[in-house]
Length: 298
Length: 160
Image (tube, rainbow over all chains, first blue to last red; front, side, top):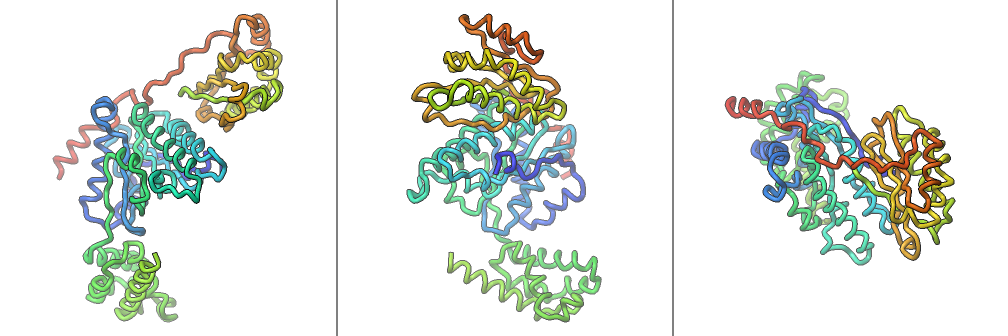
């Protein structure tokens, strides 16, 4: 894979309803979203004005938490949240697939990481427009050097992580319009020096029962656009009961529960408005059980 | 953006092979431009080849870089000779930043013993120069104005 192919998207985003919907679709405590937005706003405001030696702001946020909690979607939605606060009302979004950077060839991972972060990304953002760079599942490129397995290639792991750190330091000083958002399911796998460079490490938690109810209901209401009979069900006590049972599920799994419930019977596949509270409860039970088995296997 | 590329020369490659690698690197970089062509860059490098091979063979490119300036690209290309060439890690991927370039110049180093040869080569193609390259514009890329509209932030705060 060529280095430039690891950039999976490069687009200029405005605060359009479609872009704003990304952020709104994720149900997390409002303070989590505020913190993500405000950290990036503050960095973009201060870094061009105040020397790096004073702020030590690298322009890096880490969103961490269990899988399925919406970290990546929040990162993708951030540019649209920033756009209203930018003079041009436009923010660039660059999304990187770090997995593609790692190479089995000795020394190549380091070179590729450095080339991408220190050359390609600044070149794409060379017009100075505020830019959010998303490093999804960053643990693949900023591996904790203290945990590097001798069975792998420890020298390469060290050097690739070094390259990330060097590029972050370089970009912090020279490109204050770049703001990196890294997501990770495994903060313990991240290098400590990488973590210390983050301006904020923000936990995106599993949803509370109230949030689970909102997620399930909003999924049903979205389906009700096509199947209006589901609207009443979305506001019924059956959804409250299902949400109460669903404690521990992540947001993505909670959303899928609705479709798992629909797929339990051919009647509901044919006509989703025939969905019952029993279908939903059974789907939640199955999802909780799958979660338990998965946790034991991990 | 100031970039660097190092190419392994002798004993890893002959002077001709090393010059060919540099030629491909320059041409591949220029090929990213929407208006410039790879073939034009190949022609320019071909015109510089007699001097280029001598610069490589004499080890001059180890100390005096060939500089490519094209749009946002400002890249110093050097060679590595001797035992260091055996272990040097090359990055021969095109240098990013030439996408919007509408013109480019290849600055050939002109060390004293080869100054006349380099000058003659530079006269052979309009994209070549034996002058000293301009300083790289390596300052911050976001220095033109504030990134955040403070009035918009104030309005958001006032609006709750």
